[in-house]
Image (cartoon, rainbow, N blue to C red; front, side):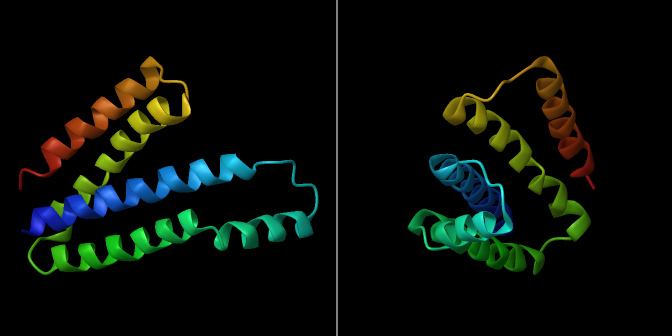
Amino acid sequence: MSYAYVFATVLLTVYGQIVVKWQVMAVARPLETWSDRVHLLLHLLLNPWIVSSLVAALLAALCWMLAMTKLDLSHAYPFVSLSFVLVLVLSALVFHEPLNWYKIVGVALIVGGVAVSSQG
């Protein structure tokens, strides 16, 4: 069950990142003054999708706490880096962000690192 909490942490974190990017892109405009920036942030904080991403962050933290009751931090934490993999893939699919060989090799190294570091 502890691994389920770790993967829930990862999925909730990725959800939050994708939603924030989606909603920021929806209202993106040039921000020239601090007043513009504050206004944008307040607008975003009242956005139900952004609120859902904040709730997801809270739930991710709770799942992580539950995972930590059974797993060593040094064993579980490398799995959190799988969020990089999911965000990379989803950002390419959802937002059509560029996916090049450097990113693919980097993600492969992350996956390899998770595989190695989770062995003990």
